[in-house]
Length: 478
Image: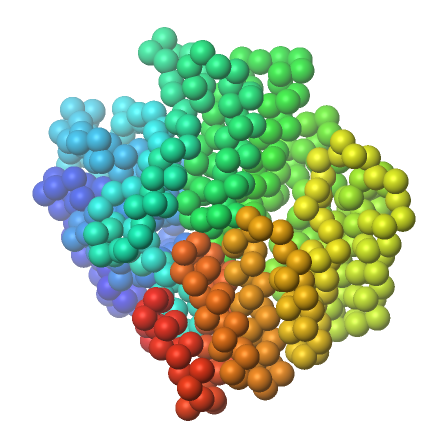
């Protein structure tokens, strides 16, 4: 494996003062070396970036994009040190000279991230810089690699929309806590930012919002040190909501380790938020995450726990019942699965729900039925699943671009399971257009599985068109 870490292969000697890219790469290697046994191959699996790309980044042969450094930083526990260095390079700061003035060691592979390089968070996004991460299909799994930004077509609109989001954080020269925008209420700014990020996630996919969502948690943490009373309670609720959103975004990217981390933080923080409904919602989300990870027992346990705690005049009991239902499907218990979905429908139709409750406002009959279809596919009832997806997608509200792509990909996979390859390929092409634009790992991983399922029908023209298009839009690497 290129870049070191393999059995019997000594890591290459690094030359951190040859260029800024070399210095950053040496810092990355130094942080990774703090974790014995963390090879590039293992790190690649953990953060979904190709090991050869990570190896070139460590050796200074390639300047990694900000989103790569962000994922790398989190994985090695650098607490933002690597991200700050990468941002300084974009700002034109000579980090080698800065490090030398701060007394950093100059020996190859010995540099440590200097505290003086802390800097302030800025508005860089995963779309920034000269390169951008794109997915490839590798052994049935989606892995992200970087390509020159100029090679892409149509990315400028996404970049422009991302850049239009208000500045993430500022810090004053007198050491005051960061605010989102000067001369405005930071709590309201945080609420506005969260709504914008949710809308952007639905339209553009998770990778366009990931860094900004995480940055807001740092803003909230700083504000919490200066606020009290109602402001502090509201900030704690926002911190929980942002952490839950970060968990969701990582879940959609396919980084389940990070999704678990943020969802666990959200549950932990929810207890001090003063909002029991928020705790119930996060617990239900943990059930959904467990279902996506294929853990039936945790999906049922968390779902039923949330159901038992939920206020009856909200949609929360129905939300919990839906996520528990898929756990029953993973257990191969069709009767309990249908009972739980029917319970969710009954809870929606028979209770006088609080019209002011913000929880599960998106939950409706089509949402429940599309999840039932997903569970039917898990049970091997592919024809019924495909029909369920088709009905639910027809009733999906506008604006849910990424979700529509997920459901289309699952519908296509269901058709393949039902041995209807032409239908599977036709629907798969629709899902592919959404997956390529949003870079949702849930969509692309589903399509990778579809690609494998359709291999036995590769002479069918529609199937050939789908597989050729998949490879032209999302390269396949063996």
